Image (cartoon, rainbow, N blue to C red; front, side, top):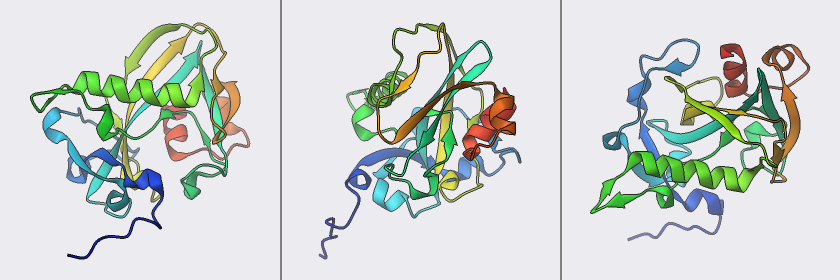
Length: 206
């Protein structure tokens, strides 16, 4: 048996993560949104290294959007981030991959709700500071994002939850994310910002 060399692979790409069959999204709308509800039976576990070049699957990304009275928190992805295609892009969703370690299960039966809560809590703890802001409400979008504008978009599906806060005090905890502050959707759409595909979609939706 030939052993795959891993010394030249991004360490993050050695992790096993949750993905789903891309065929779920064949009938998505032209705006990149799709009617889809993740179910335990949809879950596929695979290594990120292989998924990064296999468009038969989409990597599942639980994501949060922080808002306050019609404004939305935005940040710029710096060149310290792992995805070169996203460097210097402005984003409004916070989160990341749904890791194998996030899964909660009993007798090998996955508790999807608790697993998603784990994934979201871990990513938020790693990436942002709320600085005393309290959550007023949480609204899960009834559609997922399955855009195809870039190669990065086409490999992922975003499960988005809108988080309304009682203050505009969000800051970044990572060098990969440069906090820009809160903006109205129109300010982001019409300003001189290199918006990510997902950011454009969320702002238009708002």
